[in-house]
Length: 157
Image: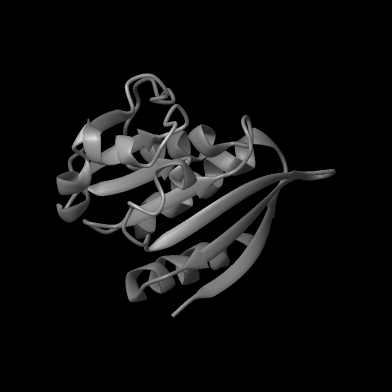
């Protein structure tokens, strides 16, 4: 079961707004994968999600730490960044498999660096530069992902 749709965003503020909207539809145990070139807005989108969940602190890409955990009142959010992985076996070596089976939400930047080891996401989000800002391609892979997908498609309405 897959569903896809593209959204268009102009600037950082719309990326943050999409993240805040995304936060409203998150459920425990969801897995979201973010892909796109360096600087395409993946961490900005996560910052918007965290703002939408009420987190007011600093949000940085976990490029060197691999994961940042945010304990929020509604859920635990694990923000992963696998950019520095050279081989998918590094995901096994890091011991992250058990995190993906919990009730915490897992948002992964650069999931392709850990494939084929990662489980299938509920929702994949690809961010790409365009002449007018950013194009965001949403692809749902589960019933929870389809529900979140429907929630997000209302964002551009």
